[in-house]
Length: 333
Image (cartoon, rainbow, N blue to C red; front, side):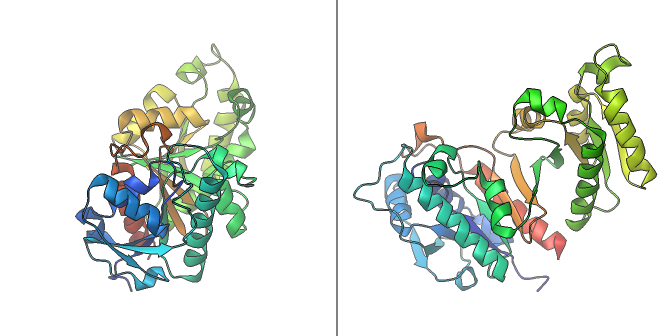
């Protein structure tokens, strides 16, 4: 079991976006097959149409389960849900049909992962408007995955060039994010981060908590959240035996993480960590969802309707997501 290649279920994402294109391109990359056996959860008709658009000579193999995948370079194994009507379907447009299809790919992949047919899931992008039109009450992948697995608050991590970034808050207005910087919340999050890092093979992790204000408030000259909330949280975490430092000024903490000074950074709000990661390497940034019964990785870009169907989408983020899923599965074994 330990030496077997992990089986990674790759969801095709919103069929109207770049998901089908980056999926075909990624699953023709020999580097992917060196570390895992990938299988697409999607629509075979759309994938064949995409391959024709790209002028790729591709062999597709329809399977009922990820465990039936050939795992051979040059053959794209597909669990075909047959849920897109090619006669009425429109590329590059928000639609109920595309949103519904994207949701069904995720639901099927989760089913496979929960029953053990897949070792992990790597997801292509979905569109928030499309899934909302299709009736989904969830704002994105993470919330949907949590609901499908009965997990209230899945943990999201960015992985870029070896650095790991977690988020205290994500999809909330900045004003609310600032109000959420509280001692108890930081402590709770850091404890979860420590546990999940150990689960994926990081022993005795060192976690840096980013500062909220410029220069970590400069001893109260620029705000008081550091003194009132962040420093007390770090002190309590140390008293519990965790290896935590901070608050570290946000203009240096991510650079230090990239240099290997920390095993992870706790970013306090969405853009604080997103901007840092994506500026370093936009297509090399992989989103990882932890705290679920299985591992999930994802591209960290959207459906890019504006370039969908034009053959110019960059598959690197999906390639990196699939490869990272395989590495982390092996670490967890």
